[in-house]
Length: 403
View 1 (tube, one colour):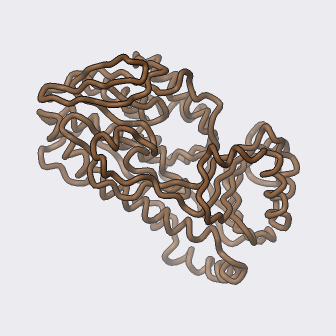
View 2 (cartoon, rainbow, N blue to C red):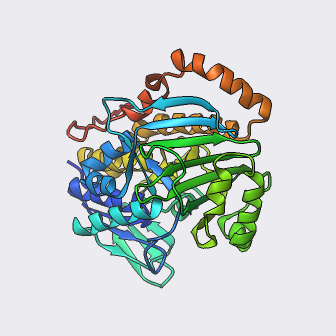
View 3 (cartoon, helix red, strand yellow):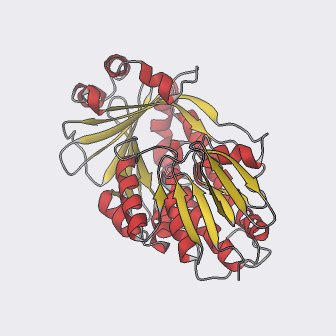
């Protein structure tokens, strides 16, 4: 049985509250500390929770509210800019469908469930430092206050402070030469509501799905060599971004309709796509990383939030079963590193396909039917990632291996 009884969870996004709920289920009292003075409700673009993510959320009882906030999507259709179908990928039939949703809806569902589960969340507590000892760790906050516990969990996102406290030489996020946008169009384009659509256009990638309320959620990636932070991208007026997007997607159906019916207030500007390269050190003796702070794949993976949920419950499971924090952290890394890095590698290949030229898109259209009957079957492309299951009831051995 673990000697860990208390935890400080730094970061109140998605990974933090899920980690706190999992730790509490493991018998560890956990409090979440969020840097911002208020919640992130209403902030962010779209995302997908895959079946493996829903399975992990089930362990802390959060799958039900998350599914209530999302929209089940069982199919993916790929087209070119002319609207010609390149391929269709059904989900794995014996798994629950993925859930498409807005990040703000996921945030709200997770936070409300965490609070209802008894997780304390303190806002306006920006971490600036931490002091470890043989018996615990003390966090220091920008407001001059502090908090102490047996361990500290860094769930503070891709620009993690905890990552640099664990290892000052830790790698920084890497920007992919793609700008990331999202939006909500006030019309329903001709499409099925159980399907996400990926359009490989002449100059950029566009994805969308039709919501039950008759509006269409969309997301876009445009090639852009110069990195732009979210703050820098938002310095450009929304109207100017919409003008550029309308020009770029002028000949890529249904881009013109989507952008014509998207108001400036419904455009989400996210800057360059950012990912985490491999992080050598995931933990110290009393501090450990979870979620985007240590494994942020490209949004192309469709797995970012799902992997964070998996890591949260796997970390809690290791802390529950192993006698000390360093041993539990080491087991956690052995269980997680290989999986998350494989997903990141796959997503990196997907990023490269979002800037295909006309010739490559034509070849894709010609080859896709054959590929889908051979090496691009749903089981081969989705099975390993989406069938992953964290066996909460199974004890973690001291020499844990990936499972």
